[in-house]
Image (tube, rainbow, N blue to C red):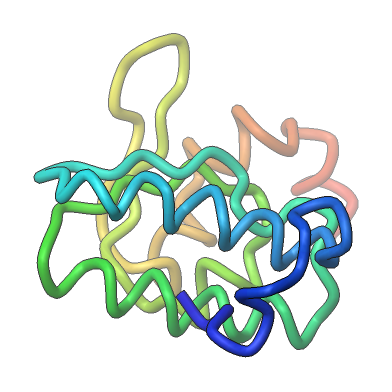
Length: 119
């Protein structure tokens, strides 16, 4: 998890990112087959986000990892298959590079006016 150097510190003294990693570590300690991470990089610094990408990749070696995330830089760095949901149904699946230009995804999440403005 990357907190060996902080083993003697109280959880409250850890940075926000380190506290997130501690929580992930507590989950990993139970050897789950599936790990669900909801917005794992929320509130993290850029460097913490990069380290979290590495952490999630390492977790995926021994468990199925499902990540709910809106930080597209994180998703892009993770470079894993993406599933976009809308109203409980799969809207699109594939690599972020392909999905980010999917018209259905743009309409649902950015609206037609966004596309019409040329963005």
